[in-house]
Image 1: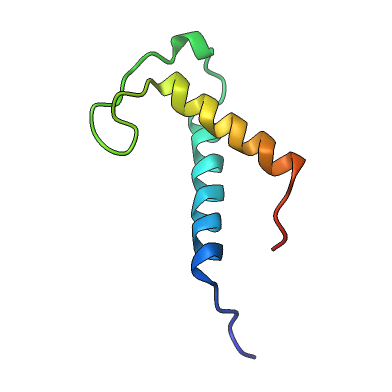
Image 2 (image 1 turned 180 degrees about the horizontal axis):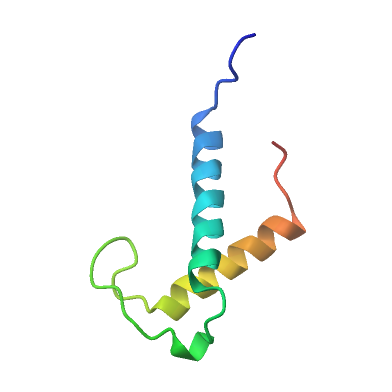
Length: 70
């Protein structure tokens, strides 16, 4: 059986889906008002945890409203 080869776009979508899943798991159970830590380094530097969590929630909602074909 021949392995399925992912396109670059598929790989990015899979990475994004994993990031959303892990971020939602990480902050599950927290009150958004408690998420005040600001990231000092990395792709979200200057963002609070609340902002990152809200981004993950919005992206998850968008994926549910308009799922991508896999």
